[in-house]
Length: 238
Image (cartoon, rainbow, N blue to C red):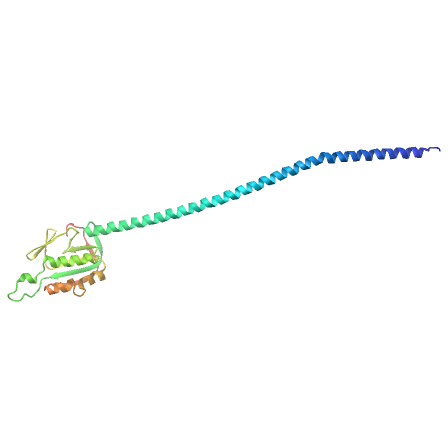
């Protein structure tokens, strides 16, 4: 059989084609083998990253919960401090009010405000043969009025313009009354600063000081004043 050149050329082409196919297969297999380990490492790396992210998220949630707990404690402490500050402020205000009230009572400061004035006068009529001393104002009469006004909450009291304090004394010498050593004559005007309604009722309630004074033949006059001004204790009178 005669081999033609076409057969030789065809065989050569088939041979080269087979070689190329075999070489391509080998290269593809090697590439697959080489690429597989890299993909596996990449998967492990990504999985490790995911695990780290999950761990960080867990830690962050824990820290957030802890932070919320601290914030709650801070708010509670702030509320307690605010309550303490309000209580301290209230106590300070009350203390200052008490100090001011005591200053008024002892006569350390000038006082001005509404109040009442009570005038005590000797009786204008003395029956014949009666003792005149039974028809004039004595220290006990003035003292009754002063004591009643203090009980009723008077802030400040003066007798004929003389401011009195918690240490004041009233002494009777005949028709003259001494107020802390200052001579004072009838009629005796007792000025008191405070709630006029309360002070007035404390004097005029049935069977009270007003009725007792009337029974002792003392002429009593009570006036309500919108404004009374009293100088400090032992201040010089004008």
